[in-house]
Image (cartoon, each protein chain N blue to C red):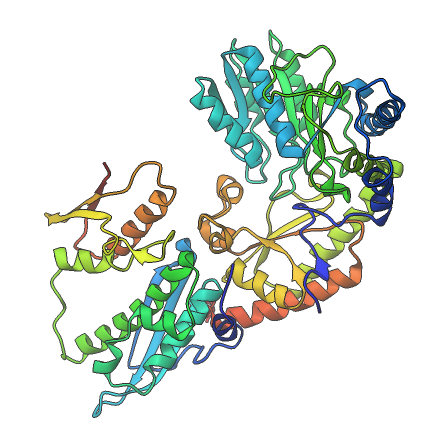
Length: 207
Length: 395
């Protein structure tokens, strides 16, 4: 595994690591079964809406720990509006890149930060709980990285069709049966969508 | 501490003994000849080759002519399985879900060729299910194959019981054994278990890489799966590296001079490692069986709440090489199929660490490893949401 020196530095000496007592908001994403889980805690100034303090916990590999560490660095001191613009690409850039099979770790870190911010906004009446629909599904699919190249499956045009009705998600995928990553991608799709109570069934079709 | 200064991944490959290198040197230089022809250089190579085959044969209770040198254990497994299947033409094969990838990928290939394969389940300590073996035998079953010592958790398969079940069948079922992890780590005479074919490898017992052997019982004819010129009576055609074979024989000679003693030494070291792990790290459990049913060189544990790639990388920074069953550390992002097959969950697989020792391993190295791993465990647990959640529950 070829990690950059920055990844190794953040892995060995992560910034802002540890559980926060009485955070204003927090979020946990990922699952131990996939081998990575991240929790992000936020302390937010009520007046200025600036992230005063941030910390994380991580169960996972070196890149998981490093991306969580860098995401907290990027968000600390920023306003919520600015922090909402932080993407997994920003995290990757700040770490001098990640191996393609590890890009999903940076997505998880960025995602957890965004969920924590969203949880804060919902709790403080700054936004409504979003309605679940096709857009939510697409947004989730955009977080799934095809490990071979390190780009998400929507950008790679691997998703041909997305439908949602009566609690059933229907996804047509453009992945051949000899694709060695198909099982990983299916697992990830299920993991990303099962957490929504609106989703009762997930049907994934292949050519 | 430099890379690999404490090397505990000996089941993948082991350091070559200096004596082995010395034994090979003449064959890399002045004695570079090939066997086969009538002239004196080739004759002397023939003689040397016979001597090396004899050394290897004696170690497993075989006849000299039953030893076929190959370019490693994987080639030996392929020649055996594809060769027997080629002779049988059609029929049924039995192996198990915890076998070494050499066997499982060959089984998958056989299925594509129209053979039928039964994959036996294994118990929680990776022992294959003997009742399922009895049930799986069909009139057209021609091959049973197994990995004698499991490559992940070190389980020694119940060879006597297997051999009795195969013998009790109403027709001949050939028994192929992958002895990659077993050879030199346990007493293993082919006649004791009715083994018909067995693959062994040099570099797991401090021999050179790139050389192994296939034992084939006299009278058993395998279809040729690799074709080419034969310079010696050997199933793998083409040129053979006499130097590597010389090194292989030397490694066998050294390993088997006092097999019981070397097993005892490995057992003492691995017991010491396991006791120290239990002393220094809590929430840790052994994967695979304890005691005599486990190969003497293998300790595999799962450390709760943390992930193996992180542990292995931090150990690596201290110069310690250890393997993990974590999906994050695998090329295909998959957890260890062996651990999953014996009922461990994802977290136990992600947190698994495999230590395989050799006769060059010292107690000091093991103590250093455990001390570092204990520090690393504390550090990674302080970062882990799973550990924090578990601690909260305890409160």
